[in-house]
Image (cartoon, rainbow, N blue to C red):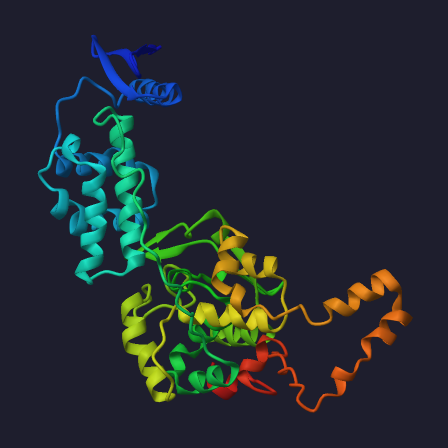
Length: 399
């Protein structure tokens, strides 16, 4: 078992350990706990077999090593693809042939500043670049290439929250009428389940439980391959409304067999191409309907807005959307939640003084003021099925 020690010389703490038959010393700073943490990292790396008596390495080479020895084994295929793109397009061109040990915290912060100044990527994208750079250099420390992570204290840019767009009930009805009849059931499923595009395309008939009216999300499609959903919480069951159930049952009756048992397949029974779906069907449907250009993902926001407008519990909404945490749900849709403060003062009086005293105190001259503004009526939706109109029948829209 690998062992090491912490020593103090002057103002600095140092660690000493053996690797590759040789003794190595490293300066860890002026705090003992930093030295202990560094020693723990070194011991773990030696035990994992990734720390050796290494020579200097340039950033480009280490990036490839990190993708191979860490990312390819620890993250999902879709995440790995994103990491590889970030390294190829942004990190390698910038840090390239520089030695790892020559990269300073100032260099890392300058990278962020330069990316923002280019204007070719958003602040949110720059934040994603920072996440990958920090993780990569953290492993450089853990594996013995660096003493400290120069990206550890990087300042992230401020990301302006954009209002999420979504279709209103009357717009949904217009949109469904303008859609290609062959794709109306797909769009209706997206609107009434909030499934992500990849989840929708990967949906199989076996994922639909007709008896308890639920749709089960068990996989997603990424670059032509079926993969697990985004997170553990993304594996979920979604309530199927009567209108959606009727539309899907009609599609099941007239279905064509395909080798993957897909609910929505192309003309030869293979998975739909996500980009073609948007370019050839979704955007043209919006144009024919006279609606603004929104993203396909905004159909997911439409579903969330419908649930919120009809007063569904936020925890239930989190489960239906497959969010990993309720904080994500609140961050995304908290601004849509109806105000619940009206009547709070009256309820407080009733609790403390009783209902009769509360009624007496509630009457005041200000109540009769001619300048008193009337509160706006809250938005309500009488069930998800109202999006298709009163007396909805699947045949009406060719679903």
